[in-house]
Length: 187
Image (cartoon, rainbow, N blue to C red):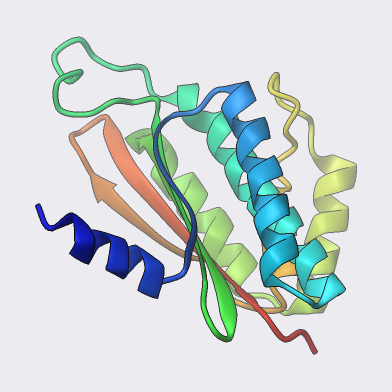
């Protein structure tokens, strides 16, 4: 492996945070703290800092709260780690890019896709209405989440669409990738 080339690629892409593995509460807390420190070095605009911090925190917490939804089948443990997550956050010239990846039950992909498509189909006013409706109607799960995460991310990214992809692993498990872009110049 060409480590110098890998280093240059990471440096050229201005990677702020890159992680693959199991997430724990302490690790999530540490990542959020590290992101806050890095953001102080990188970003001058206070509003962008606040939105970036909120969006990145929401993305990382979403991963943490939903990692245990896939129960690893004993025969599949060697091919994937159901509690493994991927986080890649980079600072580009015009935007911050946040990518997350995790395994989800295949039975939930249609529900997640519909939710993301609904969010992507509305404007800022529609997102605001969707958020208020979710707050007033949503029951909180046993994890303390109310399904507001994707809506909140979309609201804070200034109209950027949430990009996603589902890749089937087998009949029961799908790999879900979410990409979020946050403009560095807010209107």
